[in-house]
Length: 512
Image 1: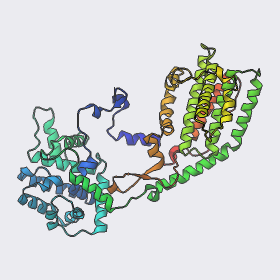
Image 2 (image 1 turned 45 degrees about the vertical axis):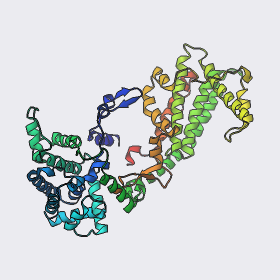
Image 3 (image 1 turned 135 degrees about the horizontal axis):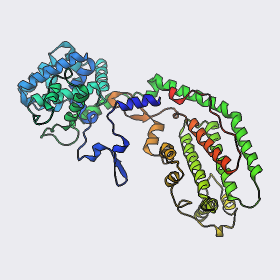
C-alpha cells in the first residue's frame, strides 16, 4: 500500500516539504510564495466551460477534440469571440452569439445530445439562444450526462480537464488575445504543440504549459473578481436538484475494508488475550523482584509506572476495541509521550540525579492544582472524586510542601525532549497526527466522522458517516512503542525479556 500511495503521489505535480519556506509560524508552499490571486478550476472555471465538459465527458475523445477544433476555427474568423466561457459567449454580439451556438449545436447529432443538459439550468447565460437550438432535456439522462462530464473533468490535471482548458486557451490564441514573444527560447515549438495538441510535441511539457497559461490568461476586463454569478448558480442548482450519495453506502471497497478491519481487530483480541495478561503479570513480578525499599523511590516507581502505563494503554486499545477509532489514536499519542519521556528520564539521570523526583513532584503538583481549584469552585467532576484527589496530592508529603509547576516538568517541551534523546523521527512520525485527535483539529475531525459524497455535482463534498468510524488499526504501532518502553525498563532494571508478539493479521496495507 505504501508503494501504491507513493506512485499516486508521484503522478501529481506537488512540491516537497523542503520547497516550503517559513514565514513566522507558517510553512508556505512555492505557489503561496508568489503574489498571486488563486483561481479554482472546480469552483469557478469548470462551470464556465460546461459546454466543453459535457462534450469531452460524453463523447469519444478524438471526436470531441475535432469538435473543439471546429469551435477554434470559428473564433479564428471572429476574433472578438475569443472568450468561449458560457458567460463570455453570452456577451458576444447578438448575431455572432447565435451563430456560435448554432455552429456548436449542429456540428453533429452526438454533440447536440451531449450539450442538451445545458438547458437544465434556468440561469444559464444566454439560455434563450441555447434553447433555440437544443431539444428539451430528458431529466434522468441529462443529469447523468452532466454527472459524467463533471466527474471526468473534476481533477484539474486530468486529461479531460486539460482538454477543456486547452480549447479555452487555444481560442484566446487564435482570437488574438494572447500573443507570444519569439524571443522566448523554444516558444515556437511550444506554440506548435498547443495548436496541434495533442498530436505534436512532448505532452509532459505541453499539458502543464496549457494548464498554467489557462490560469494566467488575462481576465475579461468587464468581469468582477471571484467566481462568476453563473459559476455560483451552477453549483447551487446542482446541489438543490440532486441528492447526496454516501460513499459508504455504494462503495464495495469501503464495505470490504470495514469488514476486513473488523475481522482483524477481533483476531488481534484473540491473539493478545493471554499474552498481555502474562506480560503484565511478569512485569509486576519484576517490580517486586527489583524493589529494594519501602521509602519513596522515584526512579523505581517512575520506571515501572511508565512501563505499566504503556502496557495498560496497549491492553485497553485492544480489549476495548479501540484500535480502529478516535480513542485508539489518542491512546497512541499517550504511548508516544510515555516512551519519549521514559528515555529522556533515563538519559538525563546521568547528569541530574533529581530528575526522577522532579518528574514525580510535577505530577503531584498537578493533582494539587486540580484539587484546590475544584475545592474553591465547590464543584466535582465525575472522573475523579475530590477525596481521591486529596489523598493522592498528600500521599508523598503534605501539599503545603508541594509546589505547583505551571510549565512542563523539566522546563522543555516534548519536541525538544525528542530531539535530545534521538527520537525526533518517531515524534514527527506519530505525534503531530495523533495530537490532532487530542485537540480535535480539523484533519482528525474530517478523517473520523465525515465521508465523501460521491455525487460529482456536489463537488464530492463532505457528509457525516452513518456508522461509527473504522480507521486503519493502530495495533502494530502501539505494539512497537509498548515494546520500546519495555526495552528501556529492561535497561533500567534488568533483565525483563518479555515482549508483545506481532498478531497474525494481514498487513494493514492489504486492506485497500
